[in-house]
Image (tube, rainbow, N blue to C red):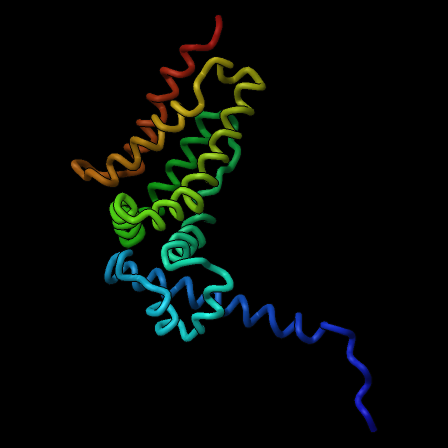
Length: 205
């Protein structure tokens, strides 16, 4: 007795998605492992393919180069841990975000980000991937938080959001890249508080 006809494309979708997700996870894991062990410049698509078991042709369908894979893998690993969660005030929102970022950069992740930032200074592709995949999305979220605070009168309208974001996160990256002192949760909280003490002084009486 012949088998009943299948709905067009249904089986391909149900089977294909898990395989695609599995391949993505394997590629990201291989990229992070290679970058952590040997440095970002050591990572190539060929090495990722060899370590992940995913064909180069499949990798190139998703990512244009090894640098973008490393940044995508890093963001996928860290991103869920540092999302902006709206708190009762703009200061508390940033304090929470910076605190989560600092916590997520303890140990191997911090070492990897330090290496990525260093390598990006002389690697155009890595720099572009870093800006597109890491800096731009995070900066956009921060700008949205500031805009909301300005709209509801919590922050003065003449506060320069670019300068404010630079002041907050520049301090984090400064201690990350020049570790003259510990990048700790206590430091993060004190730094955010002092930045906003100056910012809130600009509110009209």
